[in-house]
Amino acid sequence: MAKTIMVLGGDGFCGWPTSLHLSDSGNDVVIVDNLSRRKIDVELEAESLTPIASIHSRIATWKDLTGKDISFENVDLANEYDRICDLLLRYKPDAIVHFAEQRAAPYSMKSADHKRYTVDNNVRATHNLLAALVDTETDSHLVHLGTMGVYGYGWAGKSVIPEGYLSVGLETNDGMEMKEILHPADPGSVYHMTKTLDQLMFAFYAKNDKIRVTDLHQGIVWGTQTPQTQLDERLINRFDYDGDYGTVLNRFLMQAAIGYPLTVHGTGGQTRAFIHIRDTVRCVELAIDNPPESGAKPMIMNQVTESHRVRDLASLISKLTGVEIQYLDNPRVEALENTLVVANDKFLALGLNPTTLSQGLMEEVRDIAGKYANRIDSSKIKSVSLWRRHLHDK
Ligand code: NAD
Ligand code: USQ
Image (cartoon, rainbow, N blue to C red; front, side):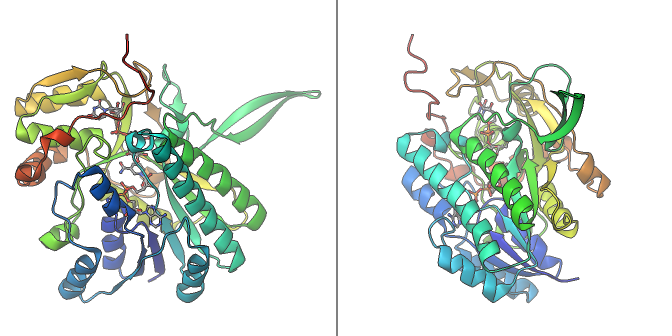
């Protein structure tokens, strides 16, 4: 059945293709975004590799091609509480998908101002939304995009990262008692820390106010296009490649396209979880269609399809394209090596059929990175945001 769905952060890399996918499925979509990500492009003097159209041109193109309307509201969720309440009362959304946060770990570590902005923006946006849902008595299902990074990346061994909750044995006066707790948080950047704070807010509002929350612990998203964004160049999705916002696999694909030696940090021993953007949009729809009960604790699902070690990804792309690999001093503070075995049973049970790395890599190098290679400013490639001042001083 068609729903009214508010997509917060619907102008961004994950939000735009999700908005189109949900609109294509017959839902009434309302994008809420303050366009802060476009302003950060100006601050960093770095642009999306792909030429993205303005939000109004994107929406008008979608209407021309499909006849479907998408509404747009320019609202700052961190600072415009009354306007959030007004939106909820006006649209009465069945579901709200919350992508609207500052999402780059390197950007969040650039300076004290960037740390403070990331915390202020992300924590206030999420809390304003929760308070407004209660204040306006809106019974929407809130689907939030969280991160695998809440679990941390210091794991070794073969233990499986569960979907959000951990069963632990507590010693009591009457013997051992089993309890299910939120998995301990171990953020690796100020950005990731804001996502661990989001989790606590969801737990509280689900318990106290019976807000229905699904928190999707997503891995690194790769790829660019979905069937809808491919329809017209004015619908093309954003592709970040710069040292702050570009994520590792998309950066390697862009670097391969221009023969720039792949920028592996440290030994490349970090293992991370990945998901293609086409699967992100499907997972969000599956999550919307399967809300938790009112009064239940937040439903947490790991939104990942495969895990890879960074240096193995670099070798794979190097073999496919002939590009060299460079090993750089790691600008981040992270474990030299980690292992990552992640449960993703819930999405597989709901019918997700994952796009694997082997299916899409060369298509990306050719059709996106290769096609727009002339837009790359190679001075923006290196990641220069250090996790700690004087990190590499001897
Ligand atoms: P993005 O920066 O491309 O999009 C975020 C959007 O939210 C932007 O359009 C921005 O303008 C908007 N926004 C930010 N703060 C806002 C505010 N206060 N009010 C209104 N709008 C605001 O990021 P993305 O890559 O699309 O990521 C979306 C979400 O998914 C983030 O929360 C991120 O943490 C999560 N996520 C992303 C990835 C990834 O690899 N890209 C992986 C895991 C999780
Ligand atoms: N890395 C390199 N070379 C590069 C870029 C990155 O070796 O050129 C390494 C980093 O040091 C790190 C790993 O690759 O060990 C991943 O870095 P990333 O920038 O691709 O991913 P991350 O900082 O974790 O953040 C991204 C998104 C974030 C999301 C997260 C999901 O920006 O929004 O939450 O992926 S996850 O990693 O699963 O926590």
